[in-house]
Length: 561
Image (cartoon, rainbow, N blue to C red):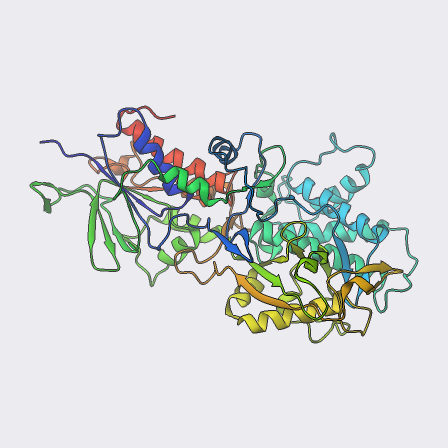
């Protein structure tokens, strides 16, 4: 009797369910494999988690389709009509085109102050990502290209490489070059204790903090400069999914028969056989399968192939000396890549405005989309009551026009701190921050809408006579969730795109001298942290799931695409 190869996929997120969908639906493979998807949590989706808050559809995790041109996620969303909905959803208007940039103390910053620094930051990032070159720079960009080129040249190695240069260091060197060439030395008036340079530095820091949430690097000094140009985005606009990102996950899972996906099955250890030897174990009269998966409930599952799709954070924790997620441990080339790559925490905070005083429920749609400019946390000029964890969040905005639900993003240690705070502590901290930003200097906030005059924010009749208050909050907690231990990966200083390729290598490798006589492809790896050019994205996870499914299909001479 011939036994079917058993494939067990660990994790029911985008990568795992894409692999399962491909393996199950490929021509000729439906009866070839025994297929299981084991998920440690109580839901499918992984770092995709669509929810509701304040009557609106929101995303606790993955939010955007990053470019619609060529994106497989966008293609699926179109096919299943997930881009159409009568119900409001997060960021249905796209990015806010007209945010109000407000400096600590209640000062609105006009375009003449904000735009030059914002343009500088964008051009520096375009240079780092390979989008701005000497040839591509138009007449208006040449100046910024020169700032970027000067910054990039600092600290280069003798062969022209960038060594261990970070994006953070590059950005600050670009800002220094800008200040060195700046001809506008006139000091500002009407902005309290803010000087022109202090404001410029703070606006630049605001954009750095936004970049921290894009990359998950809690400190941009840890983000590798050279690898930044390898990252790829699809062309076209960035959009959110009307029916929720979870609709993509549910579509992928819908083809799988009952029993394939098993929830609440948290893996404790994976035993595999990297060396050639005859197994003495028997299972149902046959030689035992080479991989044994142990679960926290004490149960065991045998497999011929395991596709591991857990997060890089879980792999980091699982390959440390005190762990033992893999037995025997993974080879050093694999663990070194896991150690070197970066993996950070990004959390979202949703707050619902509540009507108070004269403010009516349908009047809560006047809250502006804010870009927030703060003094440094060690500055003597700072507002002492604004909590430190608010000072590095760059924005606070309604999730779409006329929504009473506001959203802020947090990264790094601020994101981790957010997870520890009570709802009351969060509401008090955000309210204090809003009061500093949306009121006249040294005045209490009394608004859900504001009119801006001469730098200062002036309250108007339509605001009513009550303070801004929040009815409730909802936050993500990716950092302390043991199934994720963070949000997404980045290429850290000291690592490279080669480490992402190493992450994708299966064990044992087919055809290697070490694998002679060994069961091939026992452990395969998928997930966003295994894709060299699309790491940190849902489509990167999707591509990785397809890659590993095709690897197995080709191994068994099935059709893979």
